[in-house]
Length: 498
Image 1 (spheres, one colour):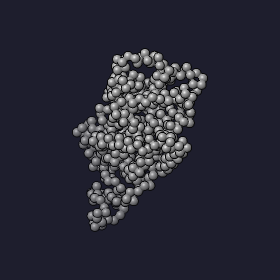
Image 2 (tube, rainbow, N blue to C red):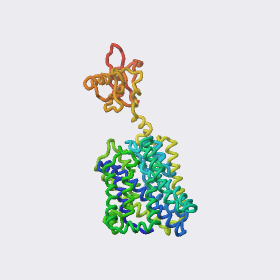
Image 3 (tube, helix red, strand yellow):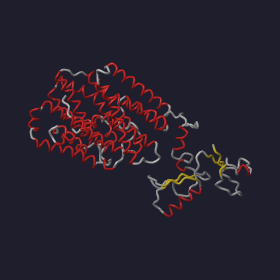
Image 4 (cartoon, helix red, strand yellow):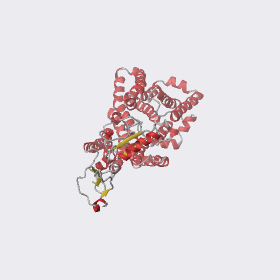
C-alpha cells in the first residue's frame, strides 16, 4: 500500500478538534466529529490493506489480527496502567467502581456497550470517566472482528458484489442512525450498527480507487476538480467542527457533512494539490503519526483533573493538559508503538501472549474493583475509609431524605425540578424558605430541613432530656450549642461528635 502523507495530516485534523472539544473550548463545540473522520479513514485503510493482500494472495486472518494487536494494545495498556495509581488515590468508591468496570469493558472490546448502558455521552458525569473515549476504539475493534470475515466470504462467492454490498450496508446503517438519533440517541451514538455507514464510506472509496482505476484517472486528471473538491472537503470538516454542538442529533444526516468531507479529501487530494500539500506538512504529519496515542492520553488527563478540582478546571489548565498529551503521545509512539509494530523486534507469539496476559490482568483488577464496590475499604492517612467519606458527600446525607415526616413551613420540599438554592438546617432554615419564597416566588429551591437538627455532618441530635447535663459539660467543646434554648419546655438538641 502506497504511503499517503495527506492521510496522516487528515488524522491530525481529526484528533486536534476532539481534544479541544473535550477541553470545553467553545469554538470547537463540534470537535466530536473528529471521531467520525477517524472512522472514514479507518474504513479506507483497512479495506485497502485487505483487498490489496487478497489480490496478491497474501492475506491471512491471523496476520491481520496480529497487526491490529501490535497497533492497538501496547499504547492502550500503557495508558490503562499509568491511570491505575491515580484512580486508586483520587477516585471515591463509586467512581472507582465505574473505572473498574471500564477496565473490564476496554479489555473485552465492549466499552461502547458499557457506556451506552450507563448513561449518555453528553452528561457532566461522563466528563469524569477516564476511559469514556475508548467507546470509539471498541467500535473499531468490533469492526475489525466482523469486517475481514465479511470480505473473505464475499471474495469467495461474489467478489463483484462487494462494492454494491458496501453501498447497501451504508444506506441501511445511515437510515437506522437517522431514526436512532431521534428515538434512541444514546444507543445511536455508541453502537456499531449506527456507525457502520461511516466506515463503509471509507471502504467504498478504497474499493473504488483499487478497482475503478480508469474512472478514477478520468476524474483525477483534472487538476482544477481535484483542488476544488479537496478544499470543499476540508471546509466541510471545518464547518462541522465550528457549527455543530451537542444539540445536533448525532450521528444522523448531519454527520454526512464531516464524513463526506473526509471522503472528498481521500479521493481528490494528493501531494500535487494545495490541500494535499497542506495536510502533508511535517507538523500535521507528525501529529497524525502520534494521533492514536494522543487520543488515548487526553481523556484520562482531563478526567483526573476534574476529579481533583472542586469546580470545573480553568481553561488554562485544560490548555496545558491538552498540550501535555502530545509529548506523552510522542513518548508512547517512540518507545511503545514503534517497537511493538516491528515484527523483527517482537515476535507474533510474544504479542499474542502480551495481549492475553495484559487483558487478563486488567479484567481481574476490574472484577476486584467491581466486587468490592470500588475498593471502598481504602483509607486516608487518618484511617478513615473512602466509603465513609463518600457517604457523607451523598445528597441528603444526615438529613431527612425528601422531607417525609418533618415539620416544614413551606408547602413542599422542592419548588423546581432544577433547583438552584439548597436550604439545609433546622426549623430556623424552614422559616428562611418561607421568607425567600415571599420575596421571590420564582426561586428554585430544594429544602433539606428537619426540626431540631442543625446543618452539621456527623452530629446526632438528642431530642428528649435523657441525660443530666451539668453546666461544665454543657459549655465543654465536646458539645455543640443548642438550637432550642427554651428551658421551660426542657427540650434540648444536644449534638455529640460521633
